[in-house]
Image 1: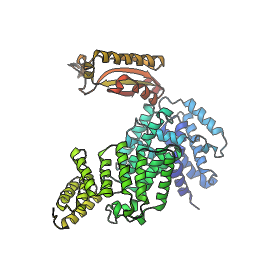
Image 2: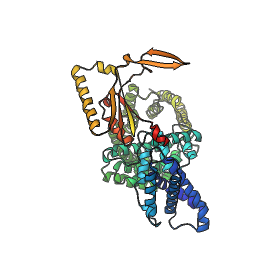
Image 3: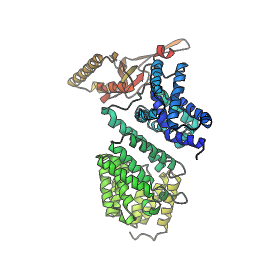
Image 4: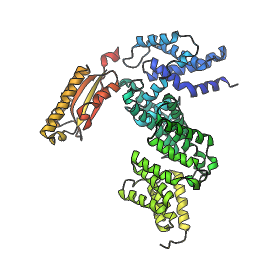
Length: 423
Length: 120
Protein backbone atom coordinates (compact mmCIF):
# COMPACT_ATOMS: atom_id res chain seq x y z
CA UNK A 1 0.00 0.00 0.00
CA UNK A 2 1.24 3.47 -0.79
CA UNK A 3 1.79 5.79 2.11
CA UNK A 4 -0.18 8.98 2.41
CA UNK A 5 2.43 11.54 1.31
CA UNK A 6 3.18 9.64 -1.87
CA UNK A 7 -0.53 9.11 -2.56
CA UNK A 8 -1.02 12.85 -2.24
CA UNK A 9 2.00 13.49 -4.41
CA UNK A 10 0.61 11.23 -7.11
CA UNK A 11 -2.77 12.92 -6.87
CA UNK A 12 -1.03 16.28 -7.12
CA UNK A 13 0.85 15.21 -10.25
CA UNK A 14 -2.21 13.71 -11.88
CA UNK A 15 -5.05 15.97 -10.79
CA UNK A 16 -3.74 19.31 -9.55
CA UNK A 17 -4.30 20.92 -12.96
CA UNK A 18 -7.87 19.69 -13.20
CA UNK A 19 -8.68 20.85 -9.66
CA UNK A 20 -7.11 24.25 -10.06
CA UNK A 21 -8.80 24.66 -13.46
CA UNK A 22 -12.21 24.28 -11.86
CA UNK A 23 -11.42 26.49 -8.90
CA UNK A 24 -10.15 29.27 -11.19
CA UNK A 25 -13.48 29.13 -13.01
CA UNK A 26 -15.62 29.26 -9.89
CA UNK A 27 -13.48 32.05 -8.47
CA UNK A 28 -14.12 34.19 -11.52
CA UNK A 29 -10.75 33.74 -13.18
CA UNK A 30 -8.56 34.60 -10.20
CA UNK A 31 -5.46 32.41 -10.70
CA UNK A 32 -3.58 33.45 -7.57
CA UNK A 33 -6.42 32.85 -5.10
CA UNK A 34 -7.35 29.58 -6.80
CA UNK A 35 -3.81 28.24 -6.49
CA UNK A 36 -3.73 29.17 -2.82
CA UNK A 37 -6.99 27.44 -1.90
CA UNK A 38 -6.04 24.29 -3.81
CA UNK A 39 -2.76 24.22 -1.92
CA UNK A 40 -4.69 24.63 1.34
CA UNK A 41 -6.94 21.72 0.35
CA UNK A 42 -3.91 19.45 -0.09
CA UNK A 43 -2.56 20.61 3.26
CA UNK A 44 -5.93 19.81 4.86
CA UNK A 45 -5.83 16.32 3.37
CA UNK A 46 -2.42 15.73 4.87
CA UNK A 47 -3.87 16.51 8.32
CA UNK A 48 -7.33 14.96 8.01
CA UNK A 49 -6.80 11.75 6.08
CA UNK A 50 -4.55 10.06 8.66
CA UNK A 51 -7.29 10.63 11.29
CA UNK A 52 -10.40 10.03 9.17
CA UNK A 53 -9.08 7.62 6.59
CA UNK A 54 -8.49 8.21 2.89
CA UNK A 55 -11.77 9.18 1.17
CA UNK A 56 -13.21 6.89 -1.49
CA UNK A 57 -12.79 9.59 -4.14
CA UNK A 58 -9.63 11.43 -3.10
CA UNK A 59 -9.61 13.89 -5.96
CA UNK A 60 -13.31 14.72 -5.59
CA UNK A 61 -12.65 15.26 -1.89
CA UNK A 62 -9.79 17.63 -2.69
CA UNK A 63 -11.87 19.55 -5.21
CA UNK A 64 -14.68 19.85 -2.67
CA UNK A 65 -12.26 20.98 0.04
CA UNK A 66 -10.79 23.60 -2.29
CA UNK A 67 -14.26 24.91 -3.12
CA UNK A 68 -15.11 25.11 0.59
CA UNK A 69 -11.95 27.05 1.23
CA UNK A 70 -12.77 29.29 -1.71
CA UNK A 71 -16.22 30.10 -0.39
CA UNK A 72 -14.79 30.80 3.10
CA UNK A 73 -12.23 33.10 1.61
CA UNK A 74 -14.74 35.07 -0.43
CA UNK A 75 -17.17 35.31 2.52
CA UNK A 76 -14.40 36.60 4.74
CA UNK A 77 -13.98 39.31 2.16
CA UNK A 78 -10.63 38.12 0.88
CA UNK A 79 -9.40 40.05 -2.09
CA UNK A 80 -10.51 38.76 -5.43
CA UNK A 81 -9.35 39.89 -8.82
CA UNK A 82 -10.47 43.27 -10.09
CA UNK A 83 -14.16 43.40 -10.95
CA UNK A 84 -14.85 39.85 -9.85
CA UNK A 85 -18.28 39.92 -8.29
CA UNK A 86 -18.00 38.28 -4.87
CA UNK A 87 -21.73 37.59 -4.61
CA UNK A 88 -21.70 35.87 -7.97
CA UNK A 89 -18.75 33.74 -6.91
CA UNK A 90 -20.45 32.75 -3.65
CA UNK A 91 -23.67 31.88 -5.46
CA UNK A 92 -21.80 29.71 -7.98
CA UNK A 93 -19.81 27.98 -5.25
CA UNK A 94 -22.90 27.32 -3.11
CA UNK A 95 -24.67 25.81 -6.05
CA UNK A 96 -21.76 23.48 -6.87
CA UNK A 97 -21.28 22.60 -3.20
CA UNK A 98 -24.96 21.70 -2.77
CA UNK A 99 -24.58 18.49 -4.77
CA UNK A 100 -23.76 15.35 -2.76
CA UNK A 101 -20.10 14.36 -2.54
CA UNK A 102 -20.32 11.34 -4.81
CA UNK A 103 -17.67 12.09 -7.36
CA UNK A 104 -20.06 14.05 -9.53
CA UNK A 105 -18.13 17.20 -8.71
CA UNK A 106 -15.36 15.56 -10.61
CA UNK A 107 -17.33 14.71 -13.71
CA UNK A 108 -19.14 18.04 -14.00
CA UNK A 109 -17.46 20.74 -16.03
CA UNK A 110 -15.02 18.54 -17.96
CA UNK A 111 -14.13 21.62 -20.03
CA UNK A 112 -12.32 23.39 -17.21
CA UNK A 113 -8.88 22.03 -18.12
CA UNK A 114 -9.38 23.16 -21.69
CA UNK A 115 -10.37 26.62 -20.49
CA UNK A 116 -7.17 26.73 -18.46
CA UNK A 117 -5.04 25.53 -21.39
CA UNK A 118 -6.44 28.18 -23.72
CA UNK A 119 -6.07 30.91 -21.14
CA UNK A 120 -2.46 29.99 -20.39
CA UNK A 121 -1.71 29.94 -24.11
CA UNK A 122 -3.51 33.19 -24.88
CA UNK A 123 -1.64 35.08 -27.62
CA UNK A 124 -1.67 38.22 -25.47
CA UNK A 125 0.92 36.47 -23.27
CA UNK A 126 4.52 36.04 -24.41
CA UNK A 127 5.23 32.59 -25.85
CA UNK A 128 7.70 31.38 -23.22
CA UNK A 129 5.37 32.58 -20.48
CA UNK A 130 2.49 30.63 -22.00
CA UNK A 131 4.35 27.37 -21.54
CA UNK A 132 5.64 28.33 -18.10
CA UNK A 133 2.15 29.14 -16.94
CA UNK A 134 0.76 25.91 -18.38
CA UNK A 135 3.44 23.89 -16.58
CA UNK A 136 2.81 25.70 -13.32
CA UNK A 137 -0.99 25.49 -13.33
CA UNK A 138 -1.96 22.56 -15.54
CA UNK A 139 0.93 20.24 -14.70
CA UNK A 140 1.29 21.37 -11.09
CA UNK A 141 5.03 22.01 -11.32
CA UNK A 142 6.48 24.15 -8.57
CA UNK A 143 7.86 27.52 -9.51
CA UNK A 144 11.36 26.11 -8.86
CA UNK A 145 10.74 23.26 -11.30
CA UNK A 146 9.44 25.64 -13.96
CA UNK A 147 12.46 27.88 -13.39
CA UNK A 148 14.78 24.90 -13.87
CA UNK A 149 13.00 24.03 -17.10
CA UNK A 150 13.70 27.50 -18.45
CA UNK A 151 17.18 27.77 -16.90
CA UNK A 152 16.37 30.95 -15.00
CA UNK A 153 16.58 31.69 -11.26
CA UNK A 154 13.44 30.79 -9.31
CA UNK A 155 12.89 34.40 -8.28
CA UNK A 156 12.91 35.51 -11.91
CA UNK A 157 10.40 32.83 -12.86
CA UNK A 158 8.18 33.67 -9.88
CA UNK A 159 8.13 37.27 -11.00
CA UNK A 160 7.28 36.32 -14.60
CA UNK A 161 4.45 34.06 -13.48
CA UNK A 162 3.00 36.72 -11.20
CA UNK A 163 3.22 39.26 -14.00
CA UNK A 164 1.40 36.91 -16.40
CA UNK A 165 -1.33 36.19 -13.85
CA UNK A 166 -1.69 39.89 -13.24
CA UNK A 167 -2.09 40.53 -16.94
CA UNK A 168 -4.77 37.85 -17.17
CA UNK A 169 -6.60 39.57 -14.34
CA UNK A 170 -6.03 43.23 -15.21
CA UNK A 171 -6.39 43.09 -18.99
CA UNK A 172 -9.22 40.63 -18.42
CA UNK A 173 -8.13 37.72 -20.56
CA UNK A 174 -11.30 35.62 -20.46
CA UNK A 175 -11.39 32.15 -18.93
CA UNK A 176 -13.15 30.52 -21.84
CA UNK A 177 -12.75 28.11 -24.70
CA UNK A 178 -12.47 30.31 -27.79
CA UNK A 179 -15.51 30.56 -30.02
CA UNK A 180 -15.63 28.53 -33.21
CA UNK A 181 -14.27 31.30 -35.46
CA UNK A 182 -11.15 31.72 -33.31
CA UNK A 183 -10.75 28.11 -32.19
CA UNK A 184 -8.52 26.90 -35.04
CA UNK A 185 -6.13 29.82 -34.73
CA UNK A 186 -5.99 29.60 -30.96
CA UNK A 187 -5.46 25.85 -31.07
CA UNK A 188 -2.50 26.42 -33.38
CA UNK A 189 -1.10 28.72 -30.70
CA UNK A 190 -1.50 26.07 -28.02
CA UNK A 191 0.19 23.44 -30.18
CA UNK A 192 3.01 25.80 -31.04
CA UNK A 193 3.66 26.46 -27.35
CA UNK A 194 3.81 22.73 -26.63
CA UNK A 195 6.02 22.15 -29.67
CA UNK A 196 8.46 24.86 -28.56
CA UNK A 197 8.77 23.25 -25.15
CA UNK A 198 9.42 19.86 -26.71
CA UNK A 199 11.94 21.21 -29.21
CA UNK A 200 13.94 22.92 -26.51
CA UNK A 201 14.07 19.65 -24.61
CA UNK A 202 14.86 17.57 -27.68
CA UNK A 203 17.64 19.76 -29.00
CA UNK A 204 18.73 22.05 -26.22
CA UNK A 205 20.11 25.27 -27.65
CA UNK A 206 22.08 25.98 -24.51
CA UNK A 207 23.85 24.14 -21.76
CA UNK A 208 26.00 21.08 -21.35
CA UNK A 209 23.34 18.50 -22.13
CA UNK A 210 22.04 17.63 -25.54
CA UNK A 211 18.67 16.36 -24.45
CA UNK A 212 16.58 17.58 -21.59
CA UNK A 213 14.21 14.67 -21.24
CA UNK A 214 12.41 16.35 -18.33
CA UNK A 215 11.21 19.07 -20.71
CA UNK A 216 10.21 16.50 -23.33
CA UNK A 217 8.25 14.53 -20.75
CA UNK A 218 6.35 17.62 -19.60
CA UNK A 219 5.65 18.61 -23.20
CA UNK A 220 4.31 15.11 -23.82
CA UNK A 221 2.04 15.43 -20.79
CA UNK A 222 0.63 18.65 -22.16
CA UNK A 223 0.23 17.15 -25.63
CA UNK A 224 -1.59 14.11 -24.23
CA UNK A 225 -3.83 16.42 -22.25
CA UNK A 226 -4.55 18.55 -25.32
CA UNK A 227 -5.20 15.37 -27.30
CA UNK A 228 -7.78 14.16 -24.78
CA UNK A 229 -9.38 17.60 -24.57
CA UNK A 230 -9.54 18.17 -28.34
CA UNK A 231 -10.14 14.64 -29.62
CA UNK A 232 -11.35 15.72 -33.06
CA UNK A 233 -8.56 18.15 -33.85
CA UNK A 234 -6.25 16.38 -36.34
CA UNK A 235 -3.11 18.46 -35.76
CA UNK A 236 -3.14 17.70 -32.03
CA UNK A 237 -2.87 14.00 -32.83
CA UNK A 238 -0.11 14.75 -35.35
CA UNK A 239 1.86 16.76 -32.82
CA UNK A 240 1.56 14.01 -30.23
CA UNK A 241 2.66 11.44 -32.85
CA UNK A 242 5.63 13.58 -33.85
CA UNK A 243 6.75 14.07 -30.25
CA UNK A 244 6.36 10.39 -29.35
CA UNK A 245 8.35 9.26 -32.38
CA UNK A 246 11.20 11.66 -31.63
CA UNK A 247 11.10 10.98 -27.91
CA UNK A 248 11.33 7.22 -28.56
CA UNK A 249 14.91 7.66 -29.82
CA UNK A 250 16.23 9.58 -26.80
CA UNK A 251 18.40 6.78 -25.38
CA UNK A 252 20.00 6.07 -28.75
CA UNK A 253 20.60 9.72 -29.55
CA UNK A 254 23.14 10.40 -26.84
CA UNK A 255 26.37 8.44 -26.54
CA UNK A 256 27.78 7.31 -23.20
CA UNK A 257 30.08 10.32 -23.10
CA UNK A 258 27.09 12.60 -23.66
CA UNK A 259 27.90 13.12 -27.34
CA UNK A 260 25.43 13.28 -30.19
CA UNK A 261 24.67 10.12 -32.18
CA UNK A 262 23.16 10.76 -35.59
CA UNK A 263 20.26 8.71 -36.88
CA UNK A 264 22.35 6.45 -39.15
CA UNK A 265 24.67 5.49 -36.29
CA UNK A 266 22.04 4.99 -33.60
CA UNK A 267 21.58 1.60 -31.95
CA UNK A 268 17.99 1.04 -32.98
CA UNK A 269 17.44 -1.57 -30.30
CA UNK A 270 17.49 1.33 -27.85
CA UNK A 271 14.45 2.90 -29.47
CA UNK A 272 11.37 2.63 -27.26
CA UNK A 273 9.11 0.23 -29.14
CA UNK A 274 5.99 1.11 -27.15
CA UNK A 275 6.34 4.80 -27.83
CA UNK A 276 6.91 4.15 -31.52
CA UNK A 277 3.80 2.03 -31.63
CA UNK A 278 1.77 4.69 -29.85
CA UNK A 279 3.23 7.37 -32.13
CA UNK A 280 2.32 5.44 -35.27
CA UNK A 281 -1.17 4.88 -33.89
CA UNK A 282 -1.58 8.61 -33.22
CA UNK A 283 -0.38 9.38 -36.73
CA UNK A 284 -2.96 6.96 -38.16
CA UNK A 285 -5.62 8.65 -36.04
CA UNK A 286 -4.49 12.06 -37.30
CA UNK A 287 -4.65 10.92 -40.92
CA UNK A 288 -8.12 9.48 -40.32
CA UNK A 289 -9.16 12.93 -39.05
CA UNK A 290 -7.85 14.46 -42.27
CA UNK A 291 -4.61 15.91 -40.94
CA UNK A 292 -2.25 17.43 -43.49
CA UNK A 293 -0.46 20.27 -41.70
CA UNK A 294 3.23 20.68 -40.87
CA UNK A 295 3.14 18.53 -37.72
CA UNK A 296 1.59 15.73 -39.77
CA UNK A 297 4.32 15.89 -42.41
CA UNK A 298 7.01 15.93 -39.75
CA UNK A 299 5.37 13.01 -37.96
CA UNK A 300 5.20 11.12 -41.26
CA UNK A 301 8.94 11.68 -41.74
CA UNK A 302 9.65 10.46 -38.21
CA UNK A 303 7.42 7.44 -38.86
CA UNK A 304 9.44 6.46 -41.94
CA UNK A 305 12.59 6.48 -39.82
CA UNK A 306 10.85 4.54 -37.07
CA UNK A 307 9.70 1.85 -39.50
CA UNK A 308 13.21 1.23 -40.87
CA UNK A 309 14.77 -1.63 -38.90
CA UNK A 310 18.20 -0.74 -40.28
CA UNK A 311 19.42 2.60 -41.70
CA UNK A 312 19.74 1.08 -45.20
CA UNK A 313 16.02 0.30 -45.20
CA UNK A 314 15.09 3.98 -44.83
CA UNK A 315 12.81 5.23 -47.59
CA UNK A 316 14.82 8.37 -48.37
CA UNK A 317 12.96 9.17 -51.60
CA UNK A 318 9.73 9.37 -49.64
CA UNK A 319 11.39 11.41 -46.90
CA UNK A 320 12.86 13.84 -49.44
CA UNK A 321 9.39 14.22 -50.97
CA UNK A 322 7.88 14.92 -47.54
CA UNK A 323 10.54 17.55 -46.85
CA UNK A 324 9.62 19.06 -50.21
CA UNK A 325 6.04 19.29 -48.98
CA UNK A 326 7.24 20.77 -45.69
CA UNK A 327 9.16 23.54 -47.48
CA UNK A 328 5.83 24.52 -49.06
CA UNK A 329 3.92 24.46 -45.76
CA UNK A 330 6.54 26.13 -43.57
CA UNK A 331 9.15 27.68 -45.85
CA UNK A 332 12.42 28.31 -44.09
CA UNK A 333 16.13 27.68 -44.39
CA UNK A 334 16.24 24.99 -41.69
CA UNK A 335 13.58 22.92 -43.46
CA UNK A 336 15.44 23.36 -46.74
CA UNK A 337 18.64 22.19 -45.10
CA UNK A 338 16.88 19.04 -43.89
CA UNK A 339 15.50 18.52 -47.35
CA UNK A 340 19.00 18.79 -48.82
CA UNK A 341 20.21 16.12 -46.40
CA UNK A 342 17.36 13.80 -47.39
CA UNK A 343 17.98 14.40 -51.09
CA UNK A 344 21.64 13.57 -50.55
CA UNK A 345 20.63 10.25 -49.02
CA UNK A 346 18.12 9.47 -51.74
CA UNK A 347 20.01 10.62 -54.82
CA UNK A 348 23.63 11.04 -53.79
CA UNK A 349 25.74 13.69 -52.02
CA UNK A 350 26.25 15.84 -55.15
CA UNK A 351 22.56 16.62 -55.44
CA UNK A 352 22.34 17.39 -51.75
CA UNK A 353 25.42 19.58 -51.95
CA UNK A 354 23.88 21.59 -54.79
CA UNK A 355 20.89 22.40 -52.57
CA UNK A 356 23.15 23.29 -49.63
CA UNK A 357 25.17 25.59 -51.89
CA UNK A 358 21.99 27.34 -53.04
CA UNK A 359 21.02 27.83 -49.45
CA UNK A 360 24.45 29.13 -48.51
CA UNK A 361 24.53 31.62 -51.34
CA UNK A 362 21.10 32.90 -50.30
CA UNK A 363 22.84 34.04 -47.09
CA UNK A 364 19.89 33.19 -44.85
CA UNK A 365 21.64 30.84 -42.46
CA UNK A 366 24.96 32.52 -41.90
CA UNK A 367 25.03 32.15 -38.12
CA UNK A 368 23.69 28.61 -37.97
CA UNK A 369 26.27 25.89 -37.36
CA UNK A 370 24.21 23.17 -39.05
CA UNK A 371 24.69 24.68 -42.50
CA UNK A 372 28.49 24.31 -42.63
CA UNK A 373 28.10 21.03 -40.69
CA UNK A 374 25.80 19.62 -43.38
CA UNK A 375 28.12 20.88 -46.11
CA UNK A 376 31.10 19.33 -44.37
CA UNK A 377 29.32 15.99 -44.06
CA UNK A 378 28.48 15.87 -47.77
CA UNK A 379 32.00 16.94 -48.78
CA UNK A 380 33.40 14.25 -46.50
CA UNK A 381 31.24 11.63 -48.19
CA UNK A 382 32.48 12.85 -51.55
CA UNK A 383 36.07 12.53 -50.35
CA UNK A 384 36.73 16.26 -50.80
CA UNK A 385 38.75 16.32 -47.59
CA UNK A 386 40.23 19.80 -47.65
CA UNK A 387 36.90 21.49 -48.33
CA UNK A 388 35.28 19.30 -45.68
CA UNK A 389 37.94 20.38 -43.20
CA UNK A 390 37.24 24.07 -43.85
CA UNK A 391 33.50 23.52 -43.48
CA UNK A 392 33.94 21.64 -40.18
CA UNK A 393 36.06 24.49 -38.87
CA UNK A 394 33.36 27.00 -39.79
CA UNK A 395 30.71 24.87 -38.08
CA UNK A 396 32.88 24.64 -34.96
CA UNK A 397 33.15 28.41 -34.82
CA UNK A 398 29.35 28.66 -34.64
CA UNK A 399 28.27 25.66 -32.54
CA UNK A 400 26.83 26.40 -29.10
CA UNK A 401 26.30 23.11 -27.25
CA UNK A 402 29.15 21.03 -25.87
CA UNK A 403 28.08 17.59 -27.22
CA UNK A 404 27.63 18.92 -30.75
CA UNK A 405 31.05 20.56 -30.51
CA UNK A 406 32.62 17.22 -29.57
CA UNK A 407 30.82 15.50 -32.44
CA UNK A 408 32.12 18.03 -34.95
CA UNK A 409 35.65 17.84 -33.54
CA UNK A 410 35.62 14.07 -33.92
CA UNK A 411 34.53 14.34 -37.55
CA UNK A 412 37.18 16.95 -38.16
CA UNK A 413 39.84 14.55 -36.81
CA UNK A 414 38.56 11.84 -39.15
CA UNK A 415 38.86 14.19 -42.10
CA UNK A 416 42.34 15.31 -41.11
CA UNK A 417 43.45 11.67 -40.89
CA UNK A 418 42.13 10.89 -44.36
CA UNK A 419 44.47 10.62 -47.38
CA UNK A 420 44.98 13.82 -49.35
CA UNK A 421 42.30 14.46 -51.91
CA UNK A 422 43.11 13.71 -55.50
CA UNK A 423 40.83 16.52 -56.63
CA UNK B 1 -14.38 46.98 -18.97
CA UNK B 2 -12.95 49.99 -20.78
CA UNK B 3 -10.10 49.59 -23.25
CA UNK B 4 -8.18 52.26 -25.10
CA UNK B 5 -7.37 51.21 -28.66
CA UNK B 6 -4.41 53.31 -29.79
CA UNK B 7 -3.84 53.49 -33.50
CA UNK B 8 -0.21 53.57 -34.56
CA UNK B 9 0.73 53.99 -38.18
CA UNK B 10 3.29 55.66 -40.34
CA UNK B 11 1.81 59.10 -40.92
CA UNK B 12 3.96 59.47 -44.06
CA UNK B 13 1.89 56.70 -45.58
CA UNK B 14 -1.10 59.05 -45.60
CA UNK B 15 0.83 61.63 -47.65
CA UNK B 16 1.62 59.07 -50.33
CA UNK B 17 -2.02 58.04 -50.73
CA UNK B 18 -3.97 59.28 -53.73
CA UNK B 19 -7.13 61.29 -53.15
CA UNK B 20 -9.32 58.31 -54.00
CA UNK B 21 -7.35 56.02 -51.71
CA UNK B 22 -7.59 58.47 -48.82
CA UNK B 23 -11.31 58.89 -49.34
CA UNK B 24 -11.88 55.17 -49.47
CA UNK B 25 -9.88 54.67 -46.31
CA UNK B 26 -11.77 57.42 -44.51
CA UNK B 27 -14.99 55.81 -45.70
CA UNK B 28 -13.90 52.58 -44.02
CA UNK B 29 -13.23 54.52 -40.83
CA UNK B 30 -16.69 56.08 -40.92
CA UNK B 31 -18.25 52.67 -41.42
CA UNK B 32 -16.23 51.21 -38.56
CA UNK B 33 -17.06 54.05 -36.18
CA UNK B 34 -20.69 53.70 -37.12
CA UNK B 35 -20.71 49.96 -36.44
CA UNK B 36 -19.04 50.20 -33.00
CA UNK B 37 -21.43 52.99 -32.09
CA UNK B 38 -24.44 50.85 -33.05
CA UNK B 39 -23.06 47.83 -31.18
CA UNK B 40 -22.77 49.97 -28.06
CA UNK B 41 -18.99 49.48 -27.69
CA UNK B 42 -17.95 53.04 -28.56
CA UNK B 43 -17.32 55.50 -25.74
CA UNK B 44 -15.15 57.97 -27.62
CA UNK B 45 -12.84 58.13 -30.60
CA UNK B 46 -10.76 60.80 -32.29
CA UNK B 47 -8.22 61.14 -35.03
CA UNK B 48 -5.12 63.20 -34.21
CA UNK B 49 -3.35 65.76 -36.35
CA UNK B 50 0.12 64.70 -37.47
CA UNK B 51 3.11 64.76 -35.10
CA UNK B 52 4.48 67.94 -36.71
CA UNK B 53 1.71 69.70 -34.76
CA UNK B 54 2.81 68.03 -31.51
CA UNK B 55 4.21 69.85 -28.52
CA UNK B 56 5.75 68.12 -25.54
CA UNK B 57 5.72 69.71 -22.11
CA UNK B 58 7.42 68.61 -18.91
CA UNK B 59 7.84 70.27 -15.53
CA UNK B 60 11.16 69.91 -13.70
CA UNK B 61 11.92 71.57 -10.37
CA UNK B 62 8.79 73.64 -10.84
CA UNK B 63 10.01 74.92 -14.20
CA UNK B 64 8.04 74.26 -17.33
CA UNK B 65 9.94 73.00 -20.34
CA UNK B 66 8.13 73.06 -23.65
CA UNK B 67 9.59 71.47 -26.76
CA UNK B 68 8.52 71.01 -30.33
CA UNK B 69 7.59 67.55 -31.54
CA UNK B 70 6.34 64.27 -30.10
CA UNK B 71 7.59 62.64 -26.91
CA UNK B 72 9.39 59.94 -28.88
CA UNK B 73 10.50 59.71 -32.49
CA UNK B 74 9.34 56.33 -33.77
CA UNK B 75 8.67 54.74 -37.10
CA UNK B 76 4.96 54.63 -36.38
CA UNK B 77 3.11 57.39 -34.61
CA UNK B 78 -0.04 57.64 -32.55
CA UNK B 79 -2.61 58.78 -35.08
CA UNK B 80 -5.87 58.38 -33.22
CA UNK B 81 -7.75 56.31 -30.68
CA UNK B 82 -10.99 54.68 -29.74
CA UNK B 83 -12.15 54.28 -26.18
CA UNK B 84 -14.44 51.25 -26.10
CA UNK B 85 -16.38 49.17 -23.63
CA UNK B 86 -15.75 45.44 -24.08
CA UNK B 87 -16.58 42.46 -21.92
CA UNK B 88 -13.03 41.08 -22.02
CA UNK B 89 -9.73 41.25 -23.88
CA UNK B 90 -10.95 38.90 -26.61
CA UNK B 91 -13.76 41.29 -27.49
CA UNK B 92 -11.33 44.23 -27.40
CA UNK B 93 -8.96 42.34 -29.74
CA UNK B 94 -11.86 41.64 -32.11
CA UNK B 95 -12.81 45.34 -32.11
CA UNK B 96 -9.20 46.45 -32.61
CA UNK B 97 -8.58 44.07 -35.49
CA UNK B 98 -11.45 45.64 -37.44
CA UNK B 99 -9.95 49.16 -37.32
CA UNK B 100 -8.86 49.94 -40.90
CA UNK B 101 -5.34 50.98 -39.82
CA UNK B 102 -4.75 47.54 -38.27
CA UNK B 103 -3.93 46.42 -41.83
CA UNK B 104 -1.22 49.08 -42.27
CA UNK B 105 0.04 49.92 -38.82
CA UNK B 106 -0.91 48.39 -35.50
CA UNK B 107 -3.29 48.90 -32.63
CA UNK B 108 -2.14 48.87 -29.04
CA UNK B 109 -4.83 47.73 -26.63
CA UNK B 110 -4.64 49.01 -23.06
CA UNK B 111 -7.18 48.30 -20.36
CA UNK B 112 -8.23 51.45 -18.57
CA UNK B 113 -7.39 51.55 -14.88
CA UNK B 114 -10.75 51.86 -13.25
CA UNK B 115 -9.74 53.42 -9.96
CA UNK B 116 -13.17 53.82 -8.41
CA UNK B 117 -13.91 50.11 -8.79
CA UNK B 118 -10.61 48.64 -7.67
CA UNK B 119 -10.85 50.71 -4.48
CA UNK B 120 -14.28 49.26 -3.70
